[in-house]
Length: 202
Image (cartoon, rainbow, N blue to C red; front, side, top):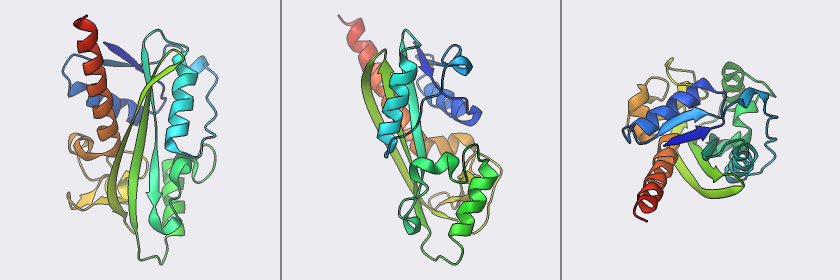
């Protein structure tokens, strides 16, 4: 089954396909055809769920099959949950990972409570209908400096105690098994597996 996604982030696309690979050849993840020519969806929601659903409905009308979109980010307790839904643009529209990470470290300078979590919500749509939303979260701490060159976004700053290292130091497969995005995607693909089985038995 081809399942479309709406992302221009190569790091996310790799993780989407890696998650689908856990289900063998059952799913093939492909970007929405002509995505670059589609007007971007405004992310005006106050929650990850609101943004994910809005994007899924916006891009879903451009495909005939299932389409999923994720909205994810970092919640830092000492910053009252920021950057949250603004994670990708924490340092401003079009901000680089380096700029976002630098701003986060600046905001946490001298702060001892560095607990945080990555959150991901995946919204699955078909045309103008939302088929479901799937949420994942993983708890960790923010380091005082970047560590590791793997992953993307805030990964080099996110220390995961069970691994004893940052997500930036963990290999991709190991990270995917526990990550917020891995959890949400696994739930979505399991849902699709059940839907396919139900349809096949009719």
